[in-house]
Amino acid sequence: MSLLIVDGVTLGYGGEPVLRDVTVSAEPGRILAVTGPSGAGKSTLLHAMAGLLRPLAGEVRASGEVIRDRDHAVSRRIVLVPQDNGLAAILTAGENLQVALMANGAGPSEARASAATALAALGLAEQSGQLVEELSGGQQQRTALARGLALAGDVLLADEVTSELDAVNRARVLELLRAEADRGAAVVFATHDAEAAAFCDAELHLRDGSAEPLAIVKVAP
Ligand SMILES: Nc1ncnc2c1ncn2[C@@H]1O[C@H](COP(=O)(O)OP(=O)(O)OP(=O)(O)O)[C@@H](O)[C@H]1O
Image 1 (cartoon, rainbow, N blue to C red):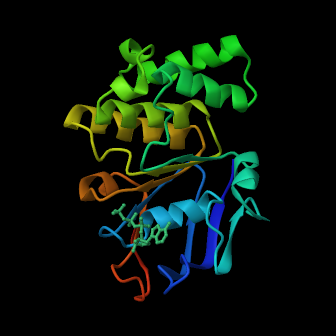
Image 2 (image 1 turned 90 degrees about the vertical axis):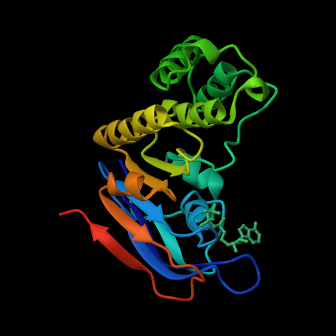
């Protein structure tokens, strides 16, 4: 399992940096909440952790290795559940999981079984054969998380994975994030939801405007 370290990272898209000099670590067995208002840079930080966005300064390391790009992050078993779900709309829920699992080295029958288990854990057993474009927003969100959990990575980066869920499913997702940490993964959870953040072990709060220094407002003992 990997310790993911963000070390003095500055991130941006060409203009003023979105985040400056951010340092934080995501530890195996723990859930780190990344909070802050809309536009504060939560997704930007997760994208850098996932190798999708190259830092302007500083570095992201997993188990001591500097993450170069997304392919490298995938090889270090860093799994991203993106805010927009990233599902293929013309495939079924089950196929979305199976394709990802097979790309990750599973054989077809193992992929089918793991996909079924992960969808069932999210209450989506009945939806496995349904096209993603026919699923509700919340069902799509749960399918994307099921795919991320099925990949059983060393690091799970979950971007706003409860925003479209009712109370029952939100509680279910938080329990599954906890189980993922208990399995030994380092879990990073970007969220607007203060109650969900309180469920996590530590919190990194990003300030709007982002020129302000960042504060870790809660760190578990
Ligand atoms: N691809 C991009 N190109 C240019 N600017 C971007 C890009 N992605 C994000 N930004 C900008 O970076 C800033 C932070 O965006 P980001 O999506 O990281 O915020 P967030 O905290 O995740 O917001 P939300 O809670 O609304 O999802 C915003 O000002 C946004 O406009």
